[in-house]
Image 1 (cartoon, one colour):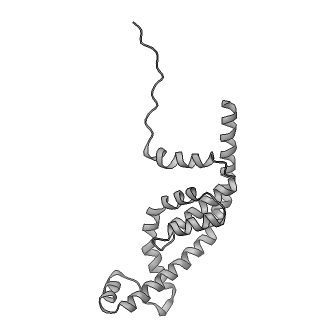
Image 2 (image 1 turned 180 degrees about the horizontal axis):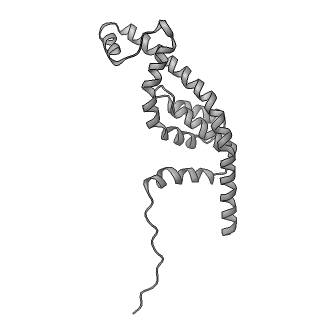
Image 3 (image 1 turned 90 degrees about the vertical axis):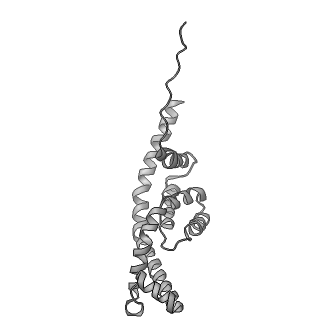
Length: 172
């Protein structure tokens, strides 16, 4: 008795492939232009590292709706940046507090604990100034890095989309 030949099973897909690669390839198949996809990546990345926790979803959704981009793709990219956002929020808040010069004292955890225990209005003022300064630093970085990433990414995505379309037409 001979056993029927069966196709070999494909190896299981890794976490990286299931969570990162497959969704991005799915976006490439949705009919987005290279311009739209590059803009989605840039805006999602910028919104993903905004130095105020809790603003990621709001800013990414608003930007995507305003520019008529894929909201789900923008949110996916923004939330993939969450670990980087958590790493950057404290240094940006410290630098944001220093941005005001003599008007704001240096932001340290001990100073913040002391102010919260003794003078919570001064603590709120320090945090407000630190957040405002951090947002200014983030906006400045985004205004410089955003166009650079966009103009580098756009031709790469156009080439990838051309290669993908030529592969699908060759298979048909």
